[in-house]
Length: 243
Image (cartoon, rainbow, N blue to C red):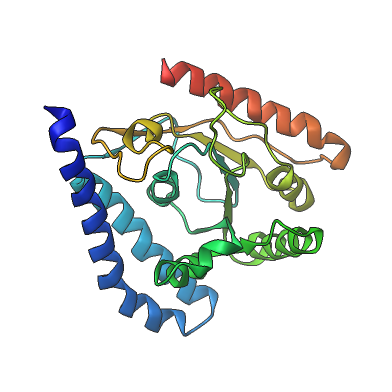
């Protein structure tokens, strides 16, 4: 019976997503014309509350486990295994943040305009682009808001709990002496598997908040140790909650 209704459920989710996106676009477009932190924060609030409500009404409610992050600056990091992660992260983080995203995302009609208002776009194809994104994230974290990063860079299709992490999030944390707030999303792969566009299924979406990891007093020599510490904690949580 589930196989019969699953395509209809997937179509319903996609249609409601597009309706919400098109309905909100005029408001976000007008706000986005004012290219200031206050405008970006207003757009973030729209996306934040929409993400929580939309997931609930789609039968994919968010369940939070662990201590809610404090209202202070963090570099948030989370695993990445599903298309749904980019929506869930806006429901999961309770305070204004901007996420690191591929530059190509901005080319998607309508969605791209909305996304670039609340993301820090990076061109990963060149070292100059990566350096520029690091400088921009540094300014955002110091002067505007939290930063969120998927340190695996792309979907984890390895069959292991996590892929290897890139250095960016940890380099940023050390450069700015900002603590890292790790999270794991163990359920999104079951809600929307990365192998298919129309393979959505209802069910809970757990957000596991782990203990923050301090970067205070660290320098670049400590980067491998910091990255491994966060990786080990996230891997253990993925194994625990996936079981």
